[in-house]
Length: 281
Image 1 (spheres, rainbow, N blue to C red):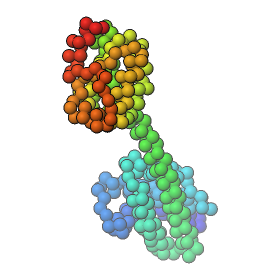
Image 2: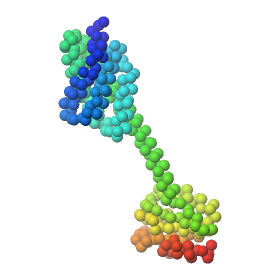
Image 3: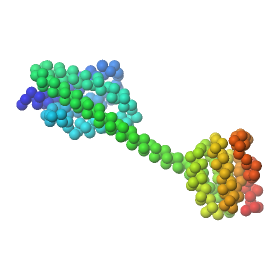
Image 4: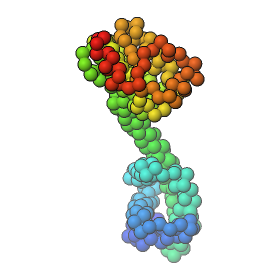
């Protein structure tokens, strides 16, 4: 058995002891404190790294075990899942590299390895760390993109649900329905209303639609202009539209925005509108 193969066996047999030494050295270099649970995680990672290093030595020719590539990917995915910062993680690699090379050099000296074998040993360490950096970054970016896409889909799904709940057409008696506007009315919600809710109104056999503004928290002038256009659109479809619950501040905002709603029938609240509509529809 040549000296490097003997060294590989030594690394495998002493992986736990070596991992503790290397982790301790790296933490001293970085000047950071890790809780015991996190230390345990890194101990386990470096134990596996050392055992895979031993396997890489036996493979030779700059080859690394497939498990090492998988481990590097898992590291990047874990960091992304924890919403970590990739630059902070990669920034530790110089200290990790020095910690490993110093430890491997000490072992080489103790075991009287030749200069050539010592260089090969440290070259293998550096090669594996280079692969680890590359695979970790790629996996981090893939996982982060996946998580962002998933989060965006969840937000869109939630937004759709909110829109459906916040722009319901509620029939209150034959021919009369109410559309209560609730919360913050933004351009996204208006677009949803114009494209999804408005086309359904004629199919509901509604003769009069009461649009209630009393639940609105905020609304900008551009959005308000679209909502007031609904009156004209529905009127062309033969549906009578009345507005209720327009607060003084909202009315002032709309008027200052140059919107004329003097031709629109308005009521202070929904009850008054319903009372007036009962005998008309």
